[in-house]
Image 1 (cartoon, rainbow, N blue to C red):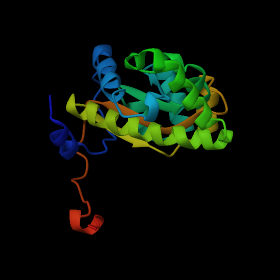
Image 2 (tube, one colour; image 1 turned 90 degrees about the horizontal axis):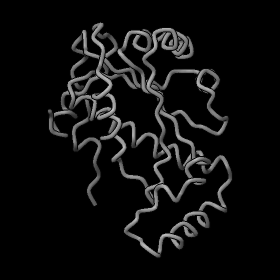
Image 3 (cartoon, one colour; image 1 turned 135 degrees about the horizontal axis):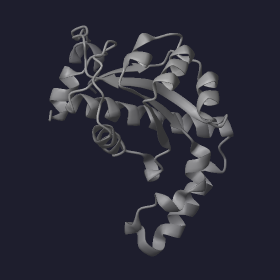
Image 4 (cartoon, rainbow, N blue to C red; image 1 turned 135 degrees about the vertical axis):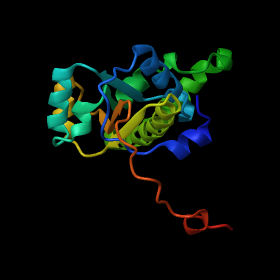
Amino acid sequence: MLTVTQAAEARKSIRKYTDAVIPEADLREIIRVASLAPSPWNIQPWRVIVVQDAETKLKLQEAAFGQPQVGGGSAVFVIYTDMTEALANLDEVIHPGFGEGAAGVKDQILGHFSSYTEEAKVQWGRAQGYTFMGYLLLAAQAHGYGTSPMLGFNPQAVRELFGLPEHAFLPALVSIGVPAEEGFPHHRHSVDALTRWV
């Protein structure tokens, strides 16, 4: 098992995989670790569909403009966020540590979002989905699996394929498998190039 630093340094986008099947226990553990990502008020609006069925992966690949890593991976994580569902089920996520104050926390959350348009709620949840994805990528790498996050796909086609509501936002598709290639080495900005100290 890799440390966070080791996983970050080792992770590259992998688009070719072996035929090895990832055990369900590993997929569950990767999702569990990713679900520890921070989320304001602990709302956790992220949801995941794990696609392993070969026929369904091919349909998803078509919705992803034919990207081969969709059909070639052991599985594909379809990440989406659903703020409507999340806000309707706040009792499931408000921390029990609040005790009798839990009702007040719920009212605070609902009051905060009462002024949001539906689009603004979607955008708020969108940021949470990308945070979740970052944790997912590192968790997969720590377990020795390669991944390829993809933004190139038809969101409406994916919604229709899995029966998702119109308000669901899809941050990304992430293929996962045992790497059959090394991927490109890192080529990143230096700390000084991307940082401003004040």
